[in-house]
Length: 168
Image 1 (cartoon, rainbow, N blue to C red):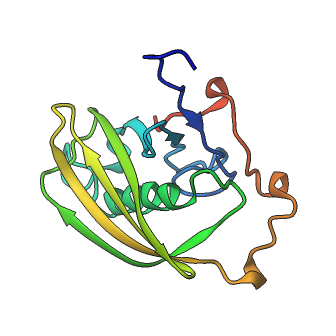
Image 2: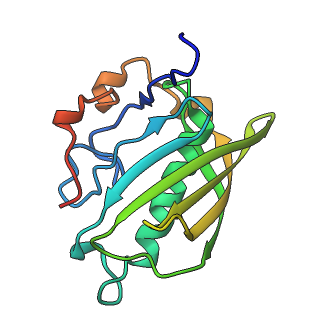
Image 3: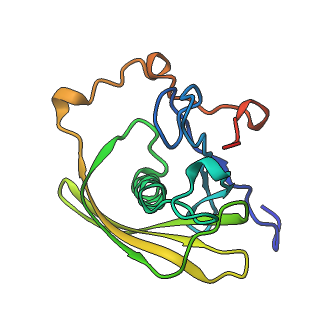
């Protein structure tokens, strides 16, 4: 690669029915996630009113769901066949997360020990400040649930950006 030229982000797969990333979930967020060259995973989203708690503010459960997903995406980057489950999620709500404004989700891998991974997630406001952050402890899914021999059956694939649905 030429000096000074950054590698392009790599889009991660989506599923069909997941609340956060499912392409065919009628009430889902339909978010798309990208592995950045520096090791972070990001997602840009603007949420509509249907996901609010208080008027103008994203519901805290939706905030936690997005943090859970971005953390999991950071732990599995580079290995699209690897699935993990959340063992513990600690969320810190620092500022109200606004409806109708661009948000950036950022996930960072911290470390792995055995079947467990520790990852960080955050939601940033348009001014770059952190609105919410989380630390997650994730565990590899037990082998009996790990049948991803046919990921297409799950709808687990990279959908072209034009196919992605936005949370509208």
